[in-house]
Amino acid sequence: MMTINRNRCRGLLPALLIIVSLWGARNASAAAPLAIKKTPLPQATYNQPYLFRLQAEGGIRPLRWRLEQGHLPGGLHLEQDGVLQGTPNQPGEFQFTIAVTDSSKPPFERTQAFTLIVRAPLFAQWSQYPKVSGRRIEGSIKVSNNTEKNLDLTFIVLAVNQIGRATAIGYQHFTLKTGTLEMEIPFGDELSRGSYQVNVDVVGEASETNAIYRTRLVTGKNLEMTQGP
Image (cartoon, rainbow, N blue to C red):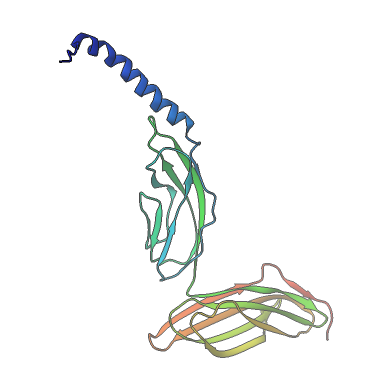
């Protein structure tokens, strides 16, 4: 029959604890440094479900994520496991900082700044910025319908001179189908001499819901027309 020496076991216990501690420390030190992957956030769409999982490298799992600074778009929230999800109800560009903490003792923490763009229901952007070409001012825009309905679209472009006189140099009225992205609409016309600012107004109406969406583009500098009557 084996006899266990209790005093000997008590003497071995501290040594075992030291070995376990050193093993844990060695494994912790062997883990790669914690770092957040610098992946650009995919664009979100107004009033459409959004889901994206943030990723980190290294560190001791599990990881815990949180919003450190700034504000998320209304309708979105960040889970502790790094999932950014929800249905955004605010269009625009949002900047914020996210932190991740690992399970090291003591824990390591890293932060990373992100930018999330939530596309507006009706979105317009310059495709060809307005320019003077001989006696004409011409350019084009790209328009997107991010809603779930077809839109009755009205597009009008005004060139406003230095005394406030407005001349229409573009107009269209048509149905912009749901899901249409970056449809190009050109504009341009001849003008008399002067200094002009170009204003683009786009209005979309969803007849089924009576919702009206508007967007506007304005040139940041005046265009000088030196030819003409």
